[in-house]
Amino acid sequence: MADDCFGHPRLAAIYDPLDPNRSDLDAYLRMVEEFGAHQVLDIGCGTGVFALLLAGRGIEVVGIDPAQASVDVARAKLGSERVRWICGDATALPPLQVDLATMTANVAQAIVDPHTWQKTLGGAYEALRPGGHLVFETRDPVRRAWEEWTRENSYRVTEIPSVGSVESWVQVIEVSWPLVTFRWTYLFATDGQVLTSDSTLRFREREEVERDLVAHGYVVEDVRDAPDRPGKEFVFVAGRP
Image (cartoon, rainbow, N blue to C red; front, side, top):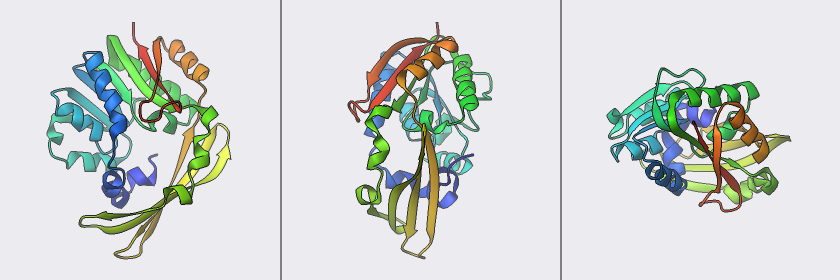
């Protein structure tokens, strides 16, 4: 089930303007070039930012996400007809053969259920052609990123065309290791509506992720640093032999 920030139509519609800096995707764009990928599966595509960047470069893209509201936002964007959009998840993919599968941003950590995580890795493996790669990021638990997720650090007011002023902030509401649950709050100035969205992330140790990948037949080719968060994240590059 998708978090409200992705699944609620009003929140999905403002997701992009609230987080316009997607420089975190630059590393993934470079890996598309590095691996010479022509077909990409974007798991957890959300509002389609990465999928549409790829499509604009002539890449054949399948974007899949469980949140219908986010997929609807993606489909309404310019150039969306060049992407195959699927509302669902990687545990039950249609037959695919891609060069690269990606899980950008929080996608891998948002798959908190161990069974679903294993099925996601298996689904991505089946979608890859031999020689293809799965790439994704996950925060290093040692860095305790959630300690910075406070109202003081996150509060902002964003002016959004045709929407108006939106106040937003995040607060951690529970740490039950290895799960961290936090709540985003959104206040719309135009009508005073307050919406909240709770999210839970699973913090996995590097060794745990590597074991899971190997168990599904992947070869862990590299574990890189995230250029936008140096020293704070692992970027896994796993190949299908």
